[in-house]
Image (tube, rainbow over all chains, first blue to last red; front, side):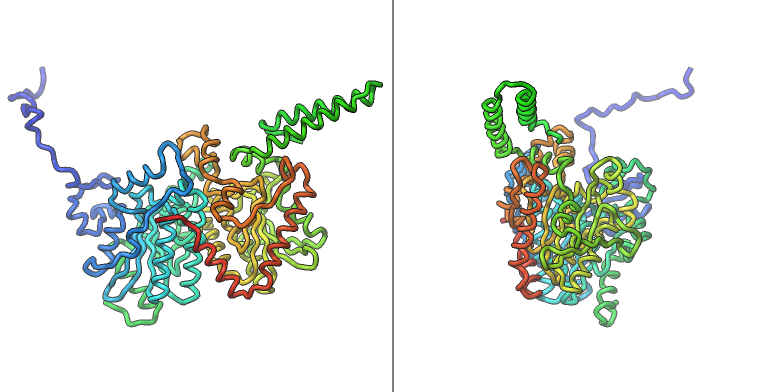
Length: 285
Length: 316
C-alpha cells in the first residue's frame, strides 16, 4: 500500500506541445547559484550571491571601461595567416575559420581607444573564446601597435590578459611575440607612460611570461587563475600536492606578484584612480 | 659512444670495421682492401643518414647524451680565464643556470647558459637544465653587471623548458622570464645567443633575446617540445614525429622564417662526434658576430634589436 495516490495521470503534455525555456535566459555559477542573464549584465557579469566573476570578453570589458561604451577600435581587420602550413587533427586555416564563425571575432585580441571617466585610455583586451585566447602573430602585432599608439599619443595603456598561452599553430612565430610585445613595453617604460596589466581568468603560459607580468601595476579579479605552467603540468612533473588556492589571484597577491585584486564593479574606478595618482593629476570622481 | 636508433646502420659498419682490423692484426690475412671498402661504405652511409635528417631525428641529436653542454663550450672557448659567478642575490644559486666572465682572445664576455648533467647524479643536481625563477634572475643580474661595465653578453641555450614546479610558481616563473625578455630588448651591450642543444619556449627565450641569435645545426627551437605538442593537439604522445615536422623547429626552418640569424655548422654526425671542431665553429661564430656589433652605439644597437623583433610575425 502506498502512502500517496496519484489522482490524475502523470505528464500528459505531448512532446510537440512541450514548452522550452529559451536558452541563455539564466546563468548558473560554478557553486550552483542561478541568476537572470539581464541581471547578471547589470551586475558587471558577477554572480551576486557568490561573487563569482563570469569569464567575459572584449565586448563586455569595453562596455565596463569606456564611457557610454564609446570607443574607436584599432587595427580591427588584422587577421592570421598560416605561415607554417600547420596541420594537426585539423588544418590551422579551418580552425581559424571555425573560431571566427563561432565568435564573430577576427582573432584573440581587440584593441581600442576611448574615454574612461572623461580621459582617453588605450585598452587591448584578449578574447578567450577565440582558440583559447592564444597568442600568435596577430595578437602580438596588435598589442605592439596599440602600445605604439599609446606611446605616440602619450595615453595610459591597459592590457587585459585572458589566455591559455602562445598559439602552437604558429610555433616559434608565436614565441617571438613575447619579445615583440615586451620590447614595446620597454619603450613605454622609457617614455614614462603608465602601463596597467589586468590579469583575468585565465592568464597562463606565454602571456604570463611577457606582458601580463610587466605592468607598472599588475592587478586581477577575485579567483582568477594566473600562472606560468598549468596546475596539471605542475602536479604531473613534481608529484606534489598543490595548495587549494594554487595559482589563484589571491595566491599571487600573497606571493607578491599582484598589486591588488579588485572586484569588477570597482575596476573602472580603481584603474582611473591609479592613473590620476601616478600621473599626479587631480582625482576624478 | 651511444647510438640513436637511426644511427644503427653506422654502428653495424663500425663494428664490422673494428672486427676486420682485429683479424688483420691477429692473423696473416691481408684485410687492407676489405677495410677500405667498409670505410668507404661507412662514409657514404653517414652522409646519407646525416644529410637527410628528419626534424625528429635532429631533436634526438640535440639531446644526445654525449653532446657538449654549456660549461664544455665555455671551457673550450675561455680555458682558464673563465670565472664562474653565482647567485641571484635573493634566494638561491640556481644550478641549472650558470654564468660568469671569460675571455675569447683579448675580449671579455659575460657567459650565461643552462647547464645539463652528464649522469644521473649531476642531471638531478642541474635539474635537467630546467631553471627556476632564481636562475633567470641570476642571469639578469649578470647581464646588468655586464651592461654596467660595457662587457658583451653571450648566452648558450640548452633547456627542455623552465621548471614547472610549485616553488617556481610561488616565486614567479612567468614574471622572471618576462622581466628578462623586457630587459634584454633594451640592454645597452651586444647580446649574442647560441642555441647549442634544446631551445624550449619561454625557458629558452628568457635568456634568448639578442642582436644575433645563432643555432647549431642539430638543435631545435620552438614554442613547445614535440612531445608536449603531440599530447595537447593530438591528445596522445604518439605523434611526436609529426609534431616535430609541423612545428618547423629545425635550424634551417628557423633561419628561413628569419627567427634566427644564422646556423653554425656541426661535424658530420653531430657536435659530439668531433667536439673540438664544434667548439671552434662556435668560437668563430661568436667572434664574427661580435665584430659586426662592437662598433655600433648603444642607441643603434637597441634600436636595431627592437626593430628586429618588431618585424617578427606573419599576418594579413
